[in-house]
Image (cartoon, rainbow over all chains, first blue to last red; front, side, top):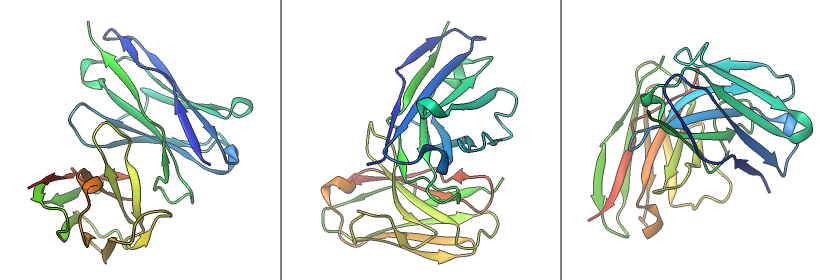
Length: 119
Length: 106
């Protein structure tokens, strides 16, 4: 079955960077885009961007363009999100999610990675 | 960006109730509207995609309708596991989510 396993919680100081991972299994990794969605504490869902693991093509929300980089390691069937210049308002749970049809909806989600930005 | 507005932002209901949640887009999105349920402390789960298609394994008490800018999620008979927050999401252009509707126990 499709499974997305995410890396553990991270704590960073303002201005630092973080790189979190999402390991996929149970399907052909290169056939399906992976999206990233974040959720600040007590808040709603915010789309950040996606990566096509087959081609490494990416698309980012304008809000995160230049501060977020999505990459993948096909041998490890893993996608990575790196975010730079962190600020306190970036404290959130970051979810990876699979797109089953290249139509920008998400049928399987990882459990989330909490990133806390605090001095 | 296309803005998605859900209503109500919260509601109280009982097990067995029929519940309707609406979602309005700031511009037409054809039928590119999806619904998710998020239980506390968990990741969202896909319920319905492209307005009215039930995702695999989702109970038939969930249904969706609408087109253009106005959409509806209906739960025909609320169950205990349905007390959660529901989000709509448009996939017509770069994805955006509604603000959520929290369904609480009356």
